[in-house]
Length: 125
Image 1: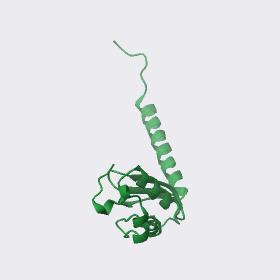
Image 2: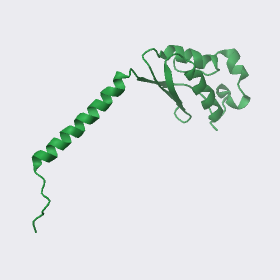
Image 3: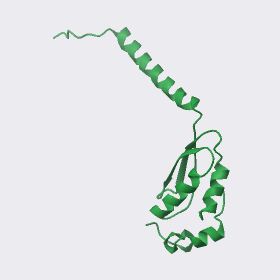
Image 4: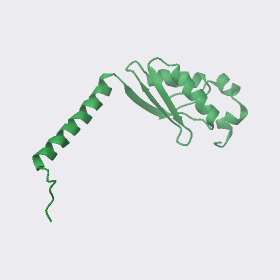
């Protein structure tokens, strides 16, 4: 049985090319906004740590979004070219958390609730 809905290959190829171009332009548009993504390890144990880590990261210049994952200890940042991972690491340190780039400020760490003092062998919760 013959299909009455035959679409010429040239039309299909043209549609695929247009779709690919649209995706490419969308990606370029996001880059033209100047956004960059940076990620690095920050150590913590719970949802309260998550809130403090993300809040400290958001205090850094150029950071538009901060998301910390409790299981992997990875902090993912999205921001402008002004965003500097070392400045974010310093801000996180001042909140009492250490990262792969900087140790936690000792006084700030001592002020964390006991359940958040991860260097004392506290398990993730």
